[in-house]
Length: 365
Image 1 (cartoon, rainbow, N blue to C red):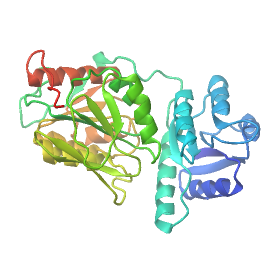
Image 2: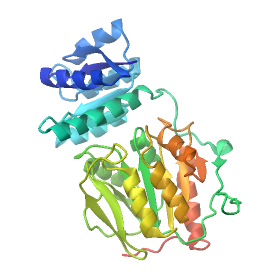
Image 3: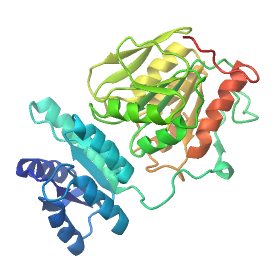
Image 4: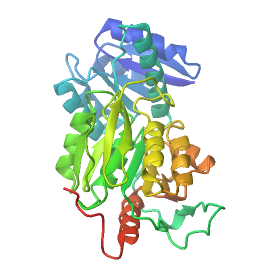
């Protein structure tokens, strides 16, 4: 049973979160705190497995408390915020300060939204409770590369066995994915084929996340918009609370942003994106599944591999939570499993080899 400490200055929010957490058979509430000072007293008497933390609180804000906590007694922290306006920027600061994940405060306006909020909160809190803090997760891991050849074809002689010209790269991630995506995207040149990404996160946060990545990367990073045309050197992140699909192709791709029910317990769903890429790319894609809890992306990555795409899974050593990659490996969807620092190099090598020596995808602008 994982113990959860809830820290929020709103009594209604504390009670709502407490009811949601307590409904899960593997979670229990160890304490309710109105502010970080009360939280510190709880931690002295009983250390929780995970903390649900608000950002805006009197006496001490959540980010200041988070920084003190990470410096003195690292505990997995999930930020629970309204995520609007300044809140989304503050949430990015919280991730950089050591928060594991960010979720939106429960939506109680309708029964459907409340149920979806409950599922998301429970999943994220459970995932956070399994995070291993204090370990470097982005270490090179070349000695631990695992290959999973497709029995239908000759095993690859190297990591970049993809022969068709790569036209699109699809990436899926969840818990720990914000850090993993930063490592990968910062190492990519601006002449790769277009990149489409699903990172499990709430609405209002993805735009700020994309903007922050764009300022740090050679490639252009944007939040996806309906009917947006994909271009080389551009990475598109699915907007929070919306599914993103690939349409068009094979020479000109567009993205479609959709509403719809949760798929594999998520919206946006990695499976939704991967399946659309498999259907449209006709074997000219690369699929990558990164760190995260659950199995979203495993079925879609298998469809990608069966279509002829080159598929990569992040290895256990470098994963914050080895769940999505493990599920994809067990399903037979992963062709090679790599450490986080090796993934960007494999993407560049595969694209270069498929396009011809020294040539990557031409800029279609």
